[in-house]
Image 1: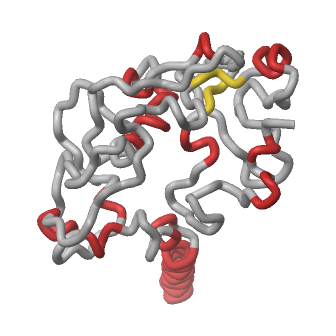
Image 2: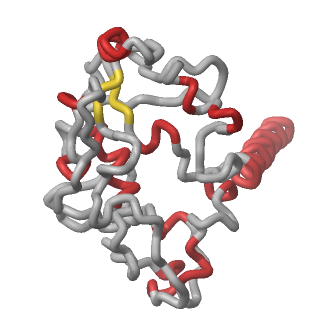
Amino acid sequence: MLFKYAKTLFLMLTLSILAFGQLASDGPKNAIVGTSHDLRGKFSGSTAICEFCHVPHKFNSLSTNPPLLWNMQVKSGSYSTYSSSSFDGQGTIRDPSTASTTNGAAYMSLLCLSCHDGTVTQASFYQVTQGMGGASLSGSFTAQNLGGSSGLTNDHPVDFIYSVSLATTDGGLKSPTEGAAVRVPYVGTPALPLYKDQPSDVSGRMECATCHNPHSNTNQGFLRMTNNGSALCLNCHG
């Protein structure tokens, strides 16, 4: 009996150590500490990191309910999108503000625009938690302008289908992986992901999160990989 209890205690301690190690070194929370996505210095008395963007007990009834327990209020208004006669994906480009359960991929750009829409000077949250210090702004909160008066017209296009068909038509793009896991033709890890509206989709859509990882600024600009020598760009263009 004593051996049984000792074995159980050893197992519990092992799992606790593993869990602590994962929390201390692997979590995305630690990767954003000290970056511009760490908003603790912007709000009086705040101690939270995750809760500015994600809230664990979100309860609001929303007309367009963002995924990932998103806490920054998204805009229902429209964004002017990229347009060019030389852009072969023009026919599939969408306004990210149309994101919904049927246009699920668009959320991976719309969530970014909840801060980077070019108008944010005072953050607006669905829910304020204790760790957010009452969400009382104590510093500048002007986010980088990606969707202001010019909308998204002067930025790399987002929310369009990046498929083998598009790459073939364009002639200057590399063909992506299609099927269950869609991604740009990146060799190695981490992959640069494309996003689906529905799990059954074969092709994926390029969104802000294809090139940017909001939880890590290791490569500056929250890029998923270094762009030295245009390395990130050459995953698709070449």
